[in-house]
Length: 493
Image 1 (tube, rainbow, N blue to C red):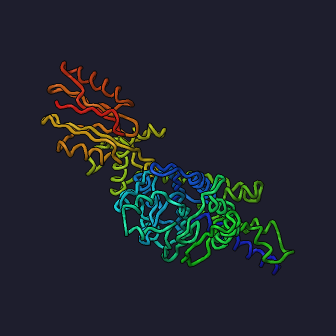
Image 2: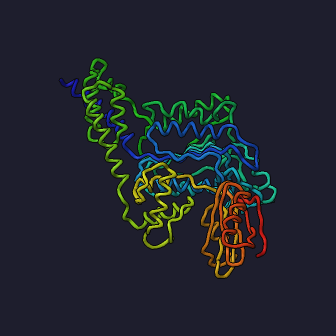
Image 3: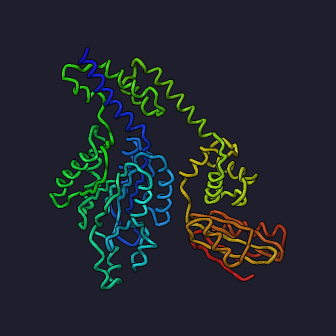
């Protein structure tokens, strides 16, 4: 009996490890940049990011993935990641692509980075401190993997323009001192350059993928395995390095209950006791992943029917939570802002939400193939937060009473495009905004006008002219442009 009691205790501890690992909130930001516009393309980073994101999702991470991001897109992904960090017990950042160190600071290079002057570091690259500051705002386990120590041709122009100050530009990335609870892992030691690799993944990411999902390895054991794997792949030329201020053990994938049973004695393994201990540990959880894991391990187990019912109850509770109507004014304001940036028109951007906001919500729900309720719910806000913000943006604005108009293009957000267009005409209330490959046109006759957005600039001009001629005879197109700046037409009235 005593042996069984010890066995049950050991198994319960192992099962508790599984429960805690997947019950905790885990959030990750994964970025891979290969298609550089002002430097030769890199072979591996996009593959590295996609493969790491897949592994992390299987390990219970809520993952924000960014591929070939420009400066604006990178900041948007960092913001989306930051929005998810509240209440997270584990935060992880993985970056593969070009990076540069200047004066001991590390900068990550978006695909549109152009380093022609020292000022470009502020306006075309991302300071690694931006990511770290947001991760370290709350006490949690923070993990950063930086596969960004490649030989970087972007620094050549920077070095030429910095003159004698170019000595502050280092090879690879600089040593980073992490805060309490944070571990930073580099593909190679500070100041050295990592290899891009000849296979689908870089040597560092390949070694990481081989062990990150292996049950029972602590983060320190993962890094030892990664280091040995990279040394073997590169014949000792590359040595991964990390700085850790972690205050406890962290497991990506804890040991399975069966693997812990021998702790109680080689002859004490009892499958029924293992199953019971596993169930006893998860039975009060609200995480459906744990019950799915139980059913996968014990499809006809003692508690399999109860586990299926728990999964249904959790799904119903989640649906009820997502359908909860928001009353918090800050969240309502966020919904309105996000709808606006997705080119829906929620009415005035201050004050209470009105009929225009409800209509904008219905229009967004229609495009997302959701029930068109028009209600500002928690589920709606969650979807809006995860929505990819379109870019670039263009806008044409007009003030009828004063016959003033303005136009802009190639802006990073709708708000920026509208503000830029209005800068030349003051308070011009009429607006048409367009993004991506869309185009806009402005047709005008004395007292008659039309603003239109269409897929091509020719379509926009044609429709704008037709709409204007319904009310005026002397209409002509006096302004047109696509969001990316092509098809530009600008005439005086």
